[in-house]
Structures are given as C-alpha cells and as structure tokens.
Image 1 (tube, protein in one colour):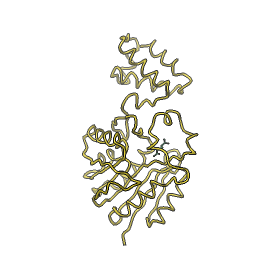
Image 2: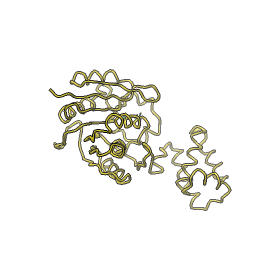
Image 3: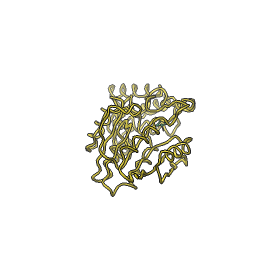
Image 4: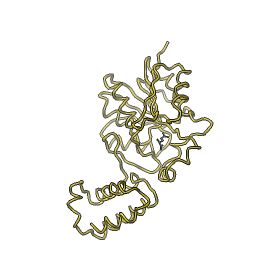
Length: 283
Ligand code: GLN
C-alpha cells in the first residue's frame, strides 16, 4: 500500500492541496478496502491486489479530471447521515447543515408539517424528518433523477417522506398540498456573473439547473416560493431559505413587501449572510 499511497500523492499533487490529498487517500482506501482510519494506518505494509490497484487507478484518474469525490464514491455525509451522491443531483453542502440546524432548533417541539422545495438529494427533508419527532415531511423537485435520489436517500435513512414532482416556477402540476407549518428551500441562487469565481469540480460536474439564476432576476425562485408559502402556510407558519451571501438585503426586502414578518438573516460559519427565516401571520 505504501507505494500505492506515494503514487496517489504524486498524481494528485498540484491539483489538490496536501491536506486534501491525505483525506482523499483515506476515502479511497475506505471505499476500496472498507478500512476504518485505524485499519488504514495499520495496513500500510499490505500488498494491494491487481483488482484493487486498478479500481484505485480509475478513482485517481477521475479526481485528476476534477470530478467531485462524492460522485466518485457515490455517497457523502450530511448532518451526520449517509446520502447517495449521484451526477445530476447537487452534492449536499456544509452551509445547508447550518440551515437544517436552525430549523430543528426552532421547530423541534411542534410536530410540524414541512415542505422542502427543490429538494435535490433530499438532504434537508431527510435530516429534518430524522431530527424533528413526529414531523410530516414532504419534498418536491422538478428533476426525475432528484426525485429518485431523494426517495432512495429517505430509504437509506429509514425515514418516510413524500417526494413529489413539482415545477416551482410554473406552479405545476396543481397539487393540493396540506397546510404547512414550515416551507424550506435551498433554490438555485448563483448568478451567471458569479460563474467565474466557481471551482471546476462544481462547474463541470454539478447540475447547472440546481445552481444558476439569471443576473437580472436572481430572486426568481425566492419570490415564487414566497408566493407559494403565502398560500400554503398556516397562520404563523415559517419560511426558511438558504441565500446567496450577496443578496440578504434584497431577499429581506422582498419578503417584507410580500407581508412576511419576523424576518431574520443568519450568517454561516464563515460570517456570510447565508440563511433567512420569517413568519407569515394571516389576517
Ligand atoms: N452554495 C452552492 C455553491 O456555491 C450553491 C447552492 C445553490 O445554488 N443553492 O455551489
């Protein structure tokens, strides 16, 4: 294994940072050999069979092409839970764990009915269902591969959630949703003009459909979802979004104009405006 590890280091040098390479190496051996960290450290003198070597070679070649490790492994972790990671489905991000944490904190005692709009992998819906006792969780998405993956992720985590096909921008099909306590969404929010600042692994491999919005209408999903929430939230129901760090003020103003109250922006661990939450009081 020692020679194998040295060769991976050499292949990936210059593409990934040294620390990242070490964690990739462990992930590779965890996948190929099923090793825990301790087993990995103890197995360095082992000889690798031809089959393992070729599997590792394929993984390293994909990493050299900047493919995300999560797609290569076919799985990732979110909020301490396992999730399938499939091309065509946005890879769950740590910022979104902070949004989930916030929603759990504020809603864990109320047995809420929750809808996650644009669920992707289902990471928000599944982790909320897992952590809010007696919650009823629905999730929707426009993309067939997301619908399938969200359902598989619910099964993987042994939770029951309802996953529906729904087009947020067209409001279709006309589904009669139950009255909701919570609407949550991490919709596309990266402006086309922000493409330049993005990494190759995201741009070349992750679904644009889940990421990008037009420069001239960056809140297109937010205002549609806010209108939807006005119709479908119970009195005093709550709406939560993950947001573009540059658009906190605009989001907050839009929600204010639409009649939402108790609007709060929350920063992520990097100190960036990343989440917004508000309430809807019916007259
Ligand atoms: N935070 C994600 C990224 O920068 C974007 C997620 C989204 O558009 N909802 O890749």
